[in-house]
Length: 270
Ligand SMILES: [Zn+2]
Image 1 (spheres, rainbow, N blue to C red):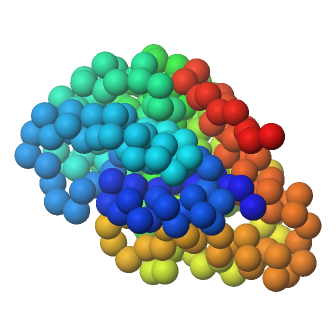
Image 2 (image 1 turned 120 degrees about the horizontal axis):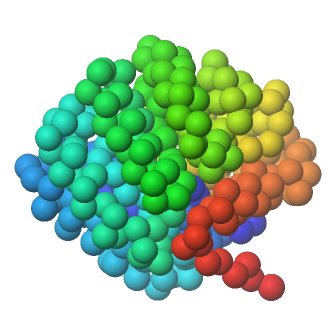
């Protein structure tokens, strides 16, 4: 089945991974900017990273017939450095017209600190002023509920935010309701550690329904599985779910969400 992975960090993956993903049905993906595993030394490092995301990765993906989209920001971990963050935010607008840029992301919170909140709000302001969509990271484990609550409250505090153009990612059983009932899209991340398994994700689809819900691998440089979305497809088939429901979650929903971006161009195969 053709599918879209709305959250995967391909700069950390090999060209062989692109080939495997294409063979498993991946036709498009979106790659949010994130933490490199170490704190970068200057805003110029981010300029280079943004060039990698807007110039190199789309070409590498295209070799296998995959459309590559991206989201730009400075991530929550490096947002502790407020001075650097503001320099990075200032250079983002020059990349926004690039044909594969869908918006600002993955912004959000990591440890729910005041500096992270400050930089989150400055990213939100940047996104609204430039009519960009947003992709948002929520914290892990014990910080998740509180961080998700803070994010929803901060977004609700800005009347300019169009909630249907915001994806709040890494939802789990205790946060999915809050996100969707507040009018946002929700992303479930399939991850071998700390986040949810394909089985838990299918349980959530059964419990909460497919409305404004997506699933991603968040494959990156750590323990992760870039082919996690096909694992979910397999699990849904094993439980006897109709192909139409599977397709809605792994293809039609991300397509509907992405299509709200001015830069999004995608022609489904006949
Ligand atoms: Zn990520």
